[in-house]
Length: 579
Image 1 (cartoon, rainbow, N blue to C red):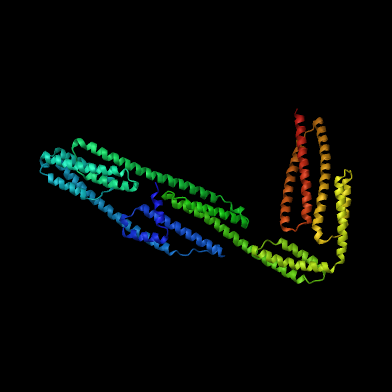
Image 2 (tube, rainbow, N blue to C red):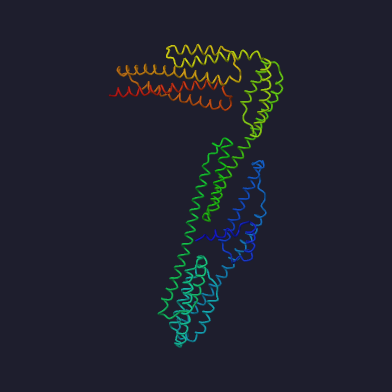
């Protein structure tokens, strides 16, 4: 069965509609249930928070400062609170009035019970008081509700003394039987109405109507003594079915609300577990923002939690969202300040480069422009929309100078072309050296490297490609040398370990030393690799420092592998000693 609170949601799709409904309730406070007021409040603030969140996002999207954001006053919220306060005041006044009325009704009914009790205990007056008793019964029915905690007790006393009165009443049997018969007909009709209510689809309405039937059943006069238990059992059986359905209905609501609370708690925990310290880039913040928005959408799909906890769990979720978006705003605020400062620095470098581009002092200007390029790399990023523009301006000024220099110093080009030919020949000789098995491989390599270094510059457009080719073949030769050296060193080490095993020397200290070296070397490799990552992102292709570090890393990895094998050799030796 649909939750009665949920079935109301489509009716109040706007805050204005909710306020109009509150104005109607002000005029009929007595006829309105608390559950409807709670639902109206929950739906209103869901719409209110959605508007506030949308306004905040639009403010940020338009370039507003998150730290300075102040939500606009919601006039509809002011009107909503005014109507709710008025309803609250009227409900409180109504409750006080109802409590006083119920207390007065209780006094009246107690007086009726006492009078009927007196007549039931004085048989000689019973017959003469028949008309009075009928009037007392009519008065009883006309009196309204009494305090709930007294209702059952006073009704039982009333019913007891009415039955006692009729039991001792000495009147004409036809009148007595007629009265019993009429009361029986009324009670049978009430039983039939109660039985129909067991099929009522609206459980809440059925339960409410049943309460009215109970009042009528209690206020109706007695039936024949032999039928009293039977007619009461019939009415009670139908009541039990309705009461059970009513209880099950609210148990289902309670279970559903508890499940909703658990689902919302899980979303809170998921959002609270976000490590804001790890969000150190705009992309990470944007990716996580999308996930947070998905969590918010998921939250909206979940129904209400238990009334006592619904507000608290919402405040918890909103606090987690606010914490995230406040931190995000602060991050982008700082990022904007940083990129703005970086843009100023890069624009200053552009101006310096443009001032120098017409210079004919080739050596000095080249040094200055090279230094400016290094400074450029050291400056952090700028806003994406400015990055390409400012870079193009800077590089055009640099390129203009270097192209002019190249055109002017054309004789250098011939020398560079000659150097290109020589270096290509050196590369070919090195490639041939890779296939040789000569013992003096390292000496040959050094000779070729010396020749390479002594050969001057090559044309700029060929520099990177040729250097990569040279570096690749040199690396392969070094790898071959390292492999050969590592193999020799490992064999010597293994022989030394065998001798120490035979001599009974302890190997644990040596193993511990190697383990420490192993860990230190791993850390060193990690440091170099981090440096390579940084240099690769900030340096141009073919950077000599990156190549040198890369060779060191490869050498260290080979040494690390050798250490692994040495440790394995010691472990074998330890096993041998233990036999």
